Image (cartoon, rainbow, N blue to C red; front, side, top):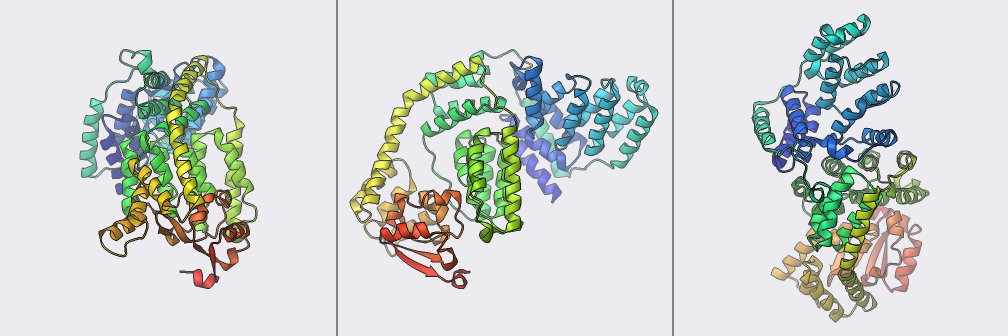
Length: 582
């Protein structure tokens, strides 16, 4: 199983190199954590040197206080791209601060750059105080990295470091190296793959930290996004530049511009509902492609599948992609609470961890609302489950509210104002699209039996490549009983069923939905009443429903929805609990 995981990370690295070295570095570090191998560590160090991440992470950071804040932010990150600036700052603090900074390096997962940096620092006598030396060795003890044992023994037994170290310290350190065991071995296939990766690392262009500096308009992602939007360029390219700017400086104001620009970008078709293995493969393939334009599509299906599949998606997405738009999908998962078994809690644990890693304080209002909505759910999810969920939510709320958010620098504020003006010139057309769709839907909700209103909407949707448009055209006025049109209708529902539920998705069991003329006509109401479901109790989309079923114990929980559906004349079927069980 371990070998398969190492190969999976090597596959990601090889696929991204040489054009996208950042996700390749993340993959190599993940692989190294599983197989502590010298050659794999050399590849990590070599690619990191090519990337030269330190200048971009620390560019423009001046003054002791701002450097300290930058250190604190980077120290909480699990992103391998932040290791170089961390190491650059580790020895820059006061004598009392250096041991804390060195010790903080140990909370990260095994990274060969950290263990090798510590050994090199010991060898040249860089740790001038006992507390710093002790902190360094504690980190090495915790890592237990066998690949650095020979170099550490050489540093401890000879050279300038030996003079400065006490005998007990040397004895403990030497004893530790003998307990680390042999380094991990790679299979012949993995060795051949790593050799190809090393060759591709050589093809990576040296970053601006080493080569001649690029023009400011191209080197600074925020300035690049500004130029693209002001020149009327591709919104997708501007979004990519804004995401890059947010990764360097996670400002809430940049995240807001990313979301505003995303709303203006041409929509991409939703990902289809497919068998689980195929859906996971497509998800990972799209993620590894690295196109930030795919992020909304990936986030939209983040919560679909088993708890293990959702956990895998979250961990993969937040390991190889840092994007503030992921926050919305994670909050949606926590709000919907699709899993109630204690054994499935890993998906929520992964979501809380990912939100802490992204560190977007804009999530606080939603988190507070989610926490408030937990009252009364004991009968649905159980007290112990709910207690753990509540504790994790409290810890995340405290962590996000602990530090004041970053403020834009003057040059960043100026760029953001220019971006707002450039986006404002494009908002008109986007608003017109939203208003047109809202108007067409209002006609359908007001006259759910009118075929003409649906066919007009179908024409409009078909021009935009939306599958609902084709479904309406195929099934209006009557759904075909058999033949190619019937087969195609079933295929659209099977593929895009969750998307077709639209705003009703939080309150409906997806597999129960029946569609007529492109909209839900019958369904079963979900047992869980989440925050998202409560918000759509009186949504006009319920007007297309002809009948619904509800499990008997859930009737009181959904009393307000039942009253609303009764006013619409929707038929109700109350199902006993035993009859509802599969």
